[in-house]
Length: 281
Ligand code: PAF
Image (cartoon, rainbow, N blue to C red; front, side, top):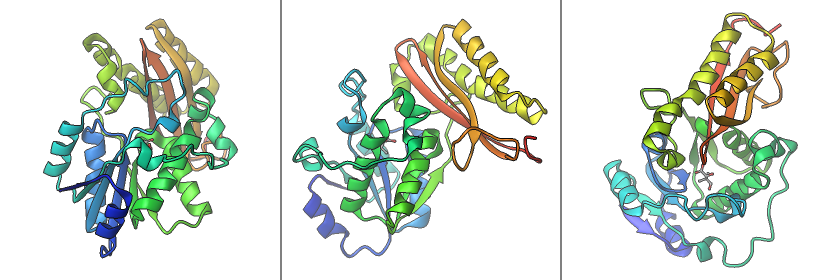
């Protein structure tokens, strides 16, 4: 496994490669990331994983400074997974000058996560576009855990005509349902078992919809209240159309329930897809 920090060295190394698969990450790797690596390896001959904690997608009061950085462990996991190249740029490499050119995003970027983390998706898409330009992959894999991010990256690639196929990886969960996330490392052991309640709430809404309940607002509000009673602070719990991430309508059969909530000082996000045999009605 090669570790490359310099853009021109990376480009020279990748020039002869016919089939490049890419997984962008912020490091602190876990099984979720490794599952994306596996998908990449099934579709491309040369696998590149980037490790870069992108300051641009954090607001000043957010956890950029304390975001877990576990480089040696990340290298060991990637080597064991058979990754060919780790791209490990420093901040000056990605942002040699203030990043005054940034993308103008669609309204979707201001909803759900974007409503609670202003500027987040501008930071994400800007760095993803830069990384795509640097690595020039044929395919890139993103996890469904960050559902709205996956959606926006797909739209960006399509609307900007980037010659990259975006593939999606399923969310990988612990036995209790808690989705793997780098931010799980902030949780105390008591919080860690409580944390699966976010998934339980999404499941509760999913089962109620599948069983025929059609008052989505009531379902969302009930689940929110239940979490709040357990000392969570819910940012949102919303059933949306899967293809647009707009509120679900009576014609929809393909939904996704998205949630974000604080447990103590840790903010967790998760989602669950729901496919109905008939439109919601
Ligand atoms: O999902 C992430 O880890 C980040 O948002 C990404 C895509 C690596 C961009 O910094």
